[in-house]
Image 1 (cartoon, one colour):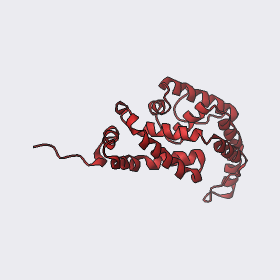
Image 2 (cartoon, helix red, strand yellow; image 1 turned 180 degrees about the horizontal axis):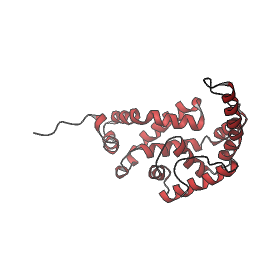
Image 3 (cartoon, helix red, strand yellow; image 1 turned 30 degrees about the vertical axis):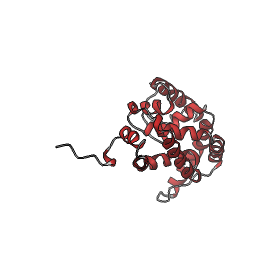
Image 4 (cartoon, one colour; image 1 turned 90 degrees about the vertical axis):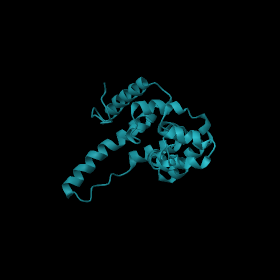
Length: 198
């Protein structure tokens, strides 16, 4: 007796992509799986106003290019982040303006903290906020992409390697360089961005 067919939600990414070539409606399963995290990444990079459009555009591009997806890659996740990162690159000016505004923005205090704690937190955050935003704005596009794929999307070195089409060693080198630059921008304070400087 043959095994019962798997429900689309149980299929892995590569199988769904391949089956969507003949049954396009199956691509909706990938949309359901990954839309939320792609949307969060887009919102963190470009703001909530552009996130809806960029996340939707990411899936539209992926749908149109799904026949070019290499099933040997396995998960569609890094591929989608690659598409989203490329779309973000088209909006770099907006991102730069956001970072400049972040430098100038006042710091919100914690409503539950006491007055002294709120004042201390504001002073500490305000002293780091401007230099951190300036440091991030001063990174090369490639370095900024690696940093934000770690900090916002939580991707591993291997996933970033797949996302950006660069060797995993390059990912590590870029993260190390970013840490040094941000530490210098913060006056020697470790920015605590995932992993070690190794």
